[in-house]
Amino acid sequence: MTRNEKILVWLLRVTGVVMLSALGAVVMPFSCMNSIHQQLGLGALPDAPIVGYLTRSISALYALHGALLIFLAADVRRYVPVVRFLAVIDAVFGAIMLGIDWAVGMPPFWTLPEGPGTVAFGLLMLWLTRSLEDKQNPTGN
Image 1 (cartoon, one colour):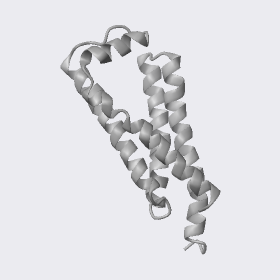
Image 2: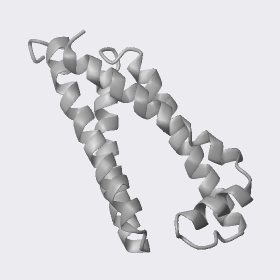
Image 3: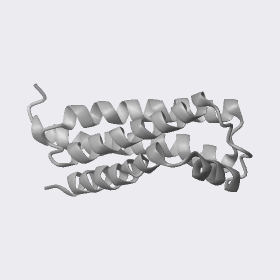
Image 4: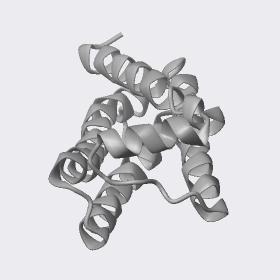
């Protein structure tokens, strides 16, 4: 296993575990969500069905993404096309999130790590997969 492959596997596993932790928010009581929201200085969390739906469904999607990353880490050489595709869409998603965060007025402590961090994650994955593709298909065919 090459150095870049080891780094990629580690990156996918660690990020996957962190993203899987979003499962907690799927079942978190509204009072806990509201408390966290207020502690972040974002005011009271509106107690409306759409808020509960959006917070829980996005948490479930983040956890799903985390599970996928852990699955892909099990055999990055086999799944390099999927990892590469995911890297590109993660980078695009990060740019979109940066725009959304800015448009809705999220505070800098939220906006700066989320969008740019996701872009950086995607670009790093993309860079790490380049050496795997070369090794998997040395003739370029």
